[in-house]
Length: 451
Ligand SMILES: *[C@@H]1O[C@H](CO)[C@@H](O)[C@H](O)[C@H]1NC(C)=O
Ligand SMILES: *[C@@H]1O[C@H](CO)[C@@H](O)[C@H](O)[C@H]1NC(C)=O
Ligand SMILES: *[C@@H]1O[C@H](CO)[C@@H](O)[C@H](O)[C@H]1NC(C)=O
Ligand SMILES: *[C@@H]1O[C@H](CO)[C@@H](O)[C@H](O)[C@H]1NC(C)=O
Ligand SMILES: *[C@@H]1O[C@H](CO)[C@@H](O)[C@H](O)[C@H]1NC(C)=O
Ligand SMILES: *[C@@H]1O[C@H](CO)[C@@H](O)[C@H](O)[C@H]1NC(C)=O
Ligand SMILES: *[C@@H]1O[C@H](CO)[C@@H](O)[C@H](O)[C@H]1NC(C)=O
Ligand SMILES: *[C@@H]1O[C@H](CO)[C@@H](O)[C@H](O)[C@H]1NC(C)=O
Ligand SMILES: *[C@@H]1O[C@H](CO)[C@@H](O)[C@H](O)[C@H]1NC(C)=O
Ligand SMILES: *[C@@H]1O[C@H](CO)[C@@H](O)[C@H](O)[C@H]1NC(C)=O
Ligand SMILES: *[C@@H]1O[C@H](CO)[C@@H](O)[C@H](O)[C@H]1NC(C)=O
Ligand SMILES: *[C@@H]1O[C@H](CO)[C@@H](O)[C@H](O)[C@H]1NC(C)=O
Image (cartoon, rainbow, N blue to C red):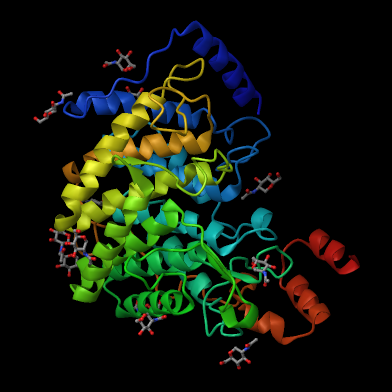
């Protein structure tokens, strides 16, 4: 908070004196891309407090929730990979391993009472990226990247909930959290996305079957639209079996999760079904661009994007880059979007006392005085992905990847594997007791029961 406050204050001063130029970016010159992105990555890491006294490794401080840290480490992996710069690798590795949790499935005790499926997924996605990029493997006594991604996938898949809507994941893992009655696209889309990547990495058909199941379910309840254009909507309340109360916000990250998931599946299965879907989502992605510059259409124009939403363009940029790597026919369209957006994003990175604090509005032609971890992540991802086609596509287990996993990771009987079915089967008090017995923190359970 202190850092941010100072940043904002000094940024205003700097803006007033008009003494700061935007980060210089020439896409024809790799050295320029590396220089620009290293400044922006440094700005991102300025928000990382985990190495300071009394702070927690892997976490960014308030107001950045735990999930966004998982997203940010994914960005830093992309920075390393596309810019071929390992300056931050040890910090990234340490962060990813510190937060794995007691059961090595990214449900650490500190988060376990508030964590949602989507939160867990973004750390799992970072681990999957580490595996696919052949990021330095952890020491043998630590969980491996592939194992972690599989544990996240398996624990999520075990929460598949047949008690309503004929399937789907609820947003929340625990019934006391707001959103337990909501089945949303980011949770289900992330399960689909992880299944697709695990399928291609391991070659295990079970993951393809899961991806199919999740996609069909999302389509069936209308989270994936059934019109001339395929859109991904935010979520649906479980009332009346998910009919009648669909929330139709469209977010870039949901589009990206599904688009790139289809691309992984097409690349692996060569099944035309997935190729066609990739192009359907590619085509409908135009709603997030204006003159090929990316924007968060549901909130950016109204200037109402919250802290989380300000990071969504980072994931979309990442998933577009991966799609371009995996399906050659998408490259012209995607690289036009990425390159144009990267130049626009760089022009927004002229704020702050450091002179490379990025804004949210990439049309602005300068810094719009917004700042934060999400803004920094988004600009970084879109700029590093201008090199998506200059670096190898995701490796798999027999073709460059060296991470070791376990198809059964995370499936031991542990609290986070309890499906909502098991919990809702009992009375509410019974469920409370079960949940308490199986762990979480004794204090929060006691509180919950008293309340
Ligand atoms: C890196 O970028 C900054 C800001 O655009 C610029 O001032 C500096 O000269 C660049 N350095 C190199 C080595 O290109
Ligand atoms: C980059 O190269 C392209 C194609 O060679 C050219 O059209 C464009 O003007 C160049 N851009 C800059 C900034 O030099
Ligand atoms: C690597 O990244 C660091 C930190 O971002 C930066 O200081 C350094 O100049 C970069 N190295 C190259 C070769 O770009
Ligand atoms: C959990 O929180 C405690 C107290 O803040 C902290 O010391 C510990 O490092 C945290 N563990 C994780 C995995 O975040
Ligand atoms: C990895 O990809 C190569 C082609 O690039 C393919 O021949 C191989 O079967 C794949 N491995 C797995 C485990 O799917
Ligand atoms: C999608 O629309 C087609 C044609 O209107 C219809 O036949 C099909 O049942 C619809 N599917 C879903 C899941 O609504
Ligand atoms: C619709 O769903 C939202 C979000 O889950 C919920 O807050 C609201 O109460 C629901 N409205 C109706 C009429 O069911
Ligand atoms: C939801 O669908 C299931 C299976 O079709 C049915 O048993 C259940 O009664 C339905 N629930 C509601 C609230 O409509
Ligand atoms: C995507 O758009 C292109 C260009 O408009 C069109 O040719 C193609 O058929 C579309 N693909 C799908 C799957 O909708
Ligand atoms: C899969 O990805 C590789 C690497 O980019 C590419 O060469 C190949 O053409 C892709 N396969 C399909 C079916 O698109
Ligand atoms: C992946 O990492 C392993 C272990 O460090 C190494 O032996 C292998 O050469 C790497 N593969 C690629 C494609 O770089
Ligand atoms: C394939 O994946 C499934 C689902 O995760 C798992 O149960 C199974 O053990 C895996 N098979 C192998 C050979 O890893």
